Length: 244
Image (cartoon, rainbow, N blue to C red; front, side, top):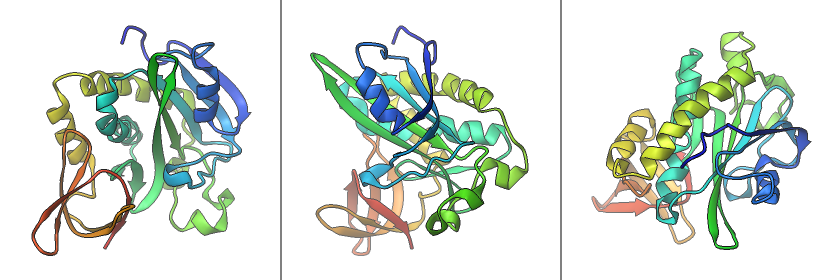
């Protein structure tokens, strides 16, 4: 990539979803490296169409990328690494739950949703990132309070979303470039070092079946390798994961 991530930042008070806004602006106001930021989302979403509640105080942004289409599987995972590293910089020792949930003490504190988009002859990935930085957990819907947390709730600190975004984007740029290079094996190992799913007993529901076993590694293509209860190795590329 030629343009640094975040060189152009488009800011909005409220949008339905920063990913949707980035898609609408592609080729017009949004190009590779553009970041769309909103104070809140009224229809934020996560993987498989799940709602992502986005009250004021959190960081909600989407980064426009133009990767090699073959590398999108790994990119969808490693996009969560800069979020974890930024949270650790602010004293929250978060980890990744495969594929791209960001958790702290088994509670969700952030998440990533990467969506591929074709525009004319170009291919883009919109990397949507939501982080509960200054969110008051008691303002979240009752059904998610027990499973969610925020930086403010854990540390008592109200941090600057601008500083958090700047710090995160610097690391994101390094990770993105590595995902487009021959360093994918190294990147997969770095992801595993931050991923608390590895070595856990898990259940993954895929469109085809449900797999139970021990998560042992992540491949350079982004698949989770599970040793199932019969001792076989199964690679899962997508699905809903539950820690057993």
